[in-house]
Image 1 (cartoon, rainbow, N blue to C red):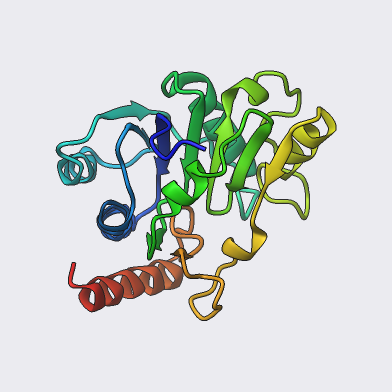
Image 2 (cartoon, helix red, strand yellow; image 1 turned 45 degrees about the vertical axis):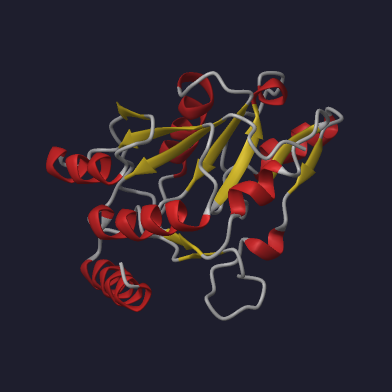
Length: 223
């Protein structure tokens, strides 16, 4: 257990609501979580430079690195899983050198210090803490021995096959599925709330709903 374990915190940004959703994400993350010994890696998935300037401006005082990684678009898919897999693998390979990487969605807001909660569960035999949907810590030492890496399968979220392989290889996975449901009403959501779909929905009704929710939540939280 090490509450100051160095962490590479990786977030991929995409979609039309990045500006408002990321502000909600960052302010609540920095307000509630211990971010010491944390390096931030922001993956720009075709987000305008003006929005990225705002994102980086919010994070002044923290070590932040930005990468451009264009989206891989397949118009035949409702959910472009290949792009997600490719991005997560890029984070593990190219974003920092810490033993542990945090891979996080940005369409969420924090209520308590999830990062310390996760760090307290770090151990030599643990490969994953949490779930890709919406936030997880991944042990790079375990990841480098896997064959599956990140990959989507029908009916399974990104990272599920990876977790199964890690268990088969003898590692422990602490997934805490009760903390990874898309709901703001469940008592289990004491740590954070995942809005869901904020980074890849481009249809106008969905965009409007996410934008309205984020604005109202920021007003409620005094952001």
